[in-house]
Length: 262
Image 1 (cartoon, rainbow, N blue to C red):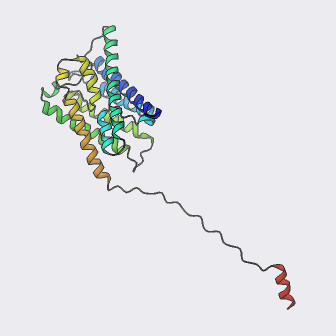
Image 2: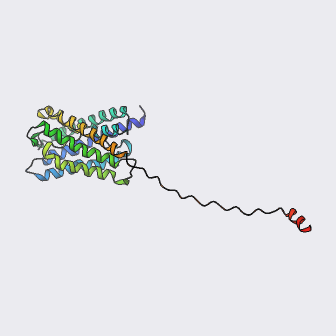
Image 3: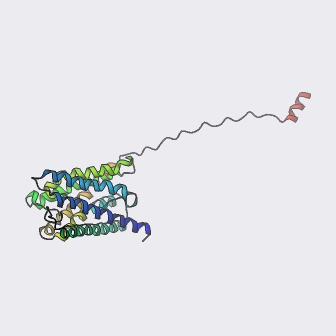
């Protein structure tokens, strides 16, 4: 394992740690029930803004996946090796556990009320306990999110320096819709850490928030890869400098003198 590879894994750990700490932490502080709609917006913004910040922080090191579903989409698209995929997923899951553990420590030490009741873990209460509905929501939202990422980061089309902002805003958008339904996972690692530490129903429903995002990411990767095949990369036209004109050949002075004598 090269030093660069280790740094990529460390970057993914840090990014996922920050995502869980600030995203789930905000949900725990403001609550995410239907009565308090402001909590939806604050939580959605927290998750989205973390992506924006981390994209410009660790994006140039690891690509800032901080999400196993995103890594799967990149893998299917040919953007990373299977070995790196496994390394990324392990790093992301460890980061999620560390983030959830830090939240538990802070809230326990400060005797702070967790308004989600489960470290910001995902659940099916918003869909009346329907695993089918929750699975469908997670598949659709993850598909939208991952397809956006693949489009923004495509090597065929340049989006300048706004990629991180676009991805962060998209995550905010899917959270605004999904928080009231499933709490919005679209990220197996983000769901795994808080659910395991919270226990209870969060663990029994956890499979939905692992299977759903992976299916959604796979669909997004295959669909986008198929659509992108028709995109033609336009090569920049380089203007050629006009060929320099050759000076007219002149006769040696000696020959010229001889010709005059004749």
